[in-house]
Image 1 (cartoon, rainbow, N blue to C red):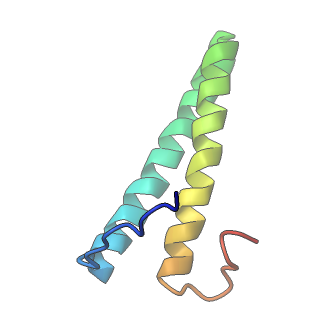
Image 2: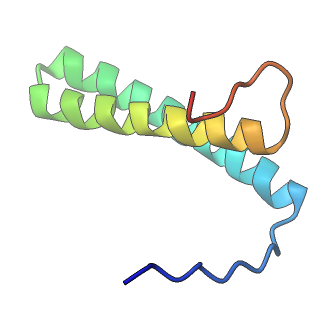
Image 3: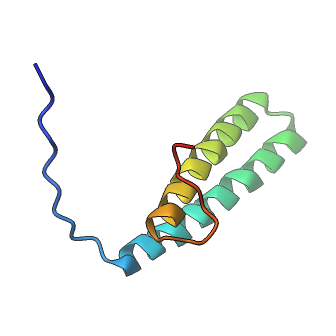
Length: 78
């Protein structure tokens, strides 16, 4: 059985996407800061969580930059 194509509304504005990019960049910085705090405290589990979430946001940020057509940003799949 083939998956049905999802219904897309295309209701997001460029401002919505730019706002999400700004929020993602801020959240990524929060995770970087949390990683450093965990490292200073010797919390290896916290470091792992922070590193994983920081890395995941790299993909989100690259995708949003690509969506906005930012010069020099290759396909997120590359």
